[in-house]
Image (cartoon, rainbow, N blue to C red; front, top):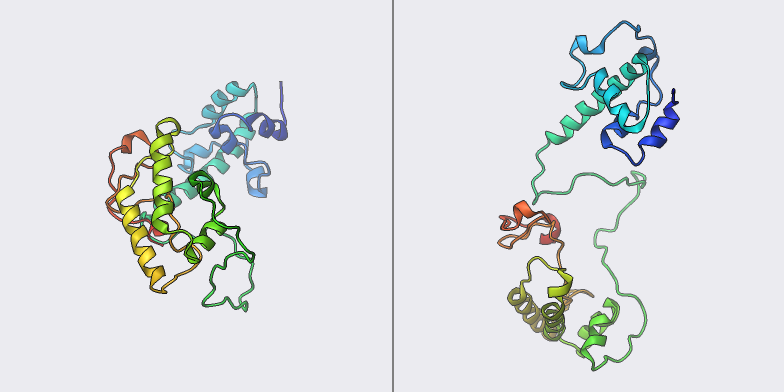
Length: 244
């Protein structure tokens, strides 16, 4: 049975990544269309080692598809281009503590001026009085927590102790944390309370405890990247997001 390229893409949507990659050659260039049927693109050494037209023929069986030798040659050219691009990306040395790669599209025009001292501002509004129940405090939105800390109703240490107590009580069931740095969190909370009391309030997140995802390296702290082979790994440097 013969299938169109569109049927191929539909069939491979939930299938192997290899076939999805191969199916990206949906519109061959004029040069590709002129490749003679008897030519073998492998003879020129342009195709990735180990990937042949026969590789596609065998992979087609997984999806009940069938392509002609000419169609396989066109897909082989596309795969070659993609493999070379992947090799270039993998060759880049990007350290965990280095700046993030440019992976975001910025539509602003060159003449657009960005404020040099842009700051995050807390939502305008009045927070309710702080509840006496620790559970209600723990579930309060961060805008309320920020207001209670800056107004002196709540200390960073009390808030941090509240969360540490809940982690100790529930994490045996939830397994939400890999590494809990309780002593460090309390020391930083005490420092924040002293700074705020002295009038050195750094902003709406000052004194708010936080958790860092296990994918972000934190120097001297067990950071496992969520993978068993790295379960005992101690990070040697801070990732950019952890440092900031």
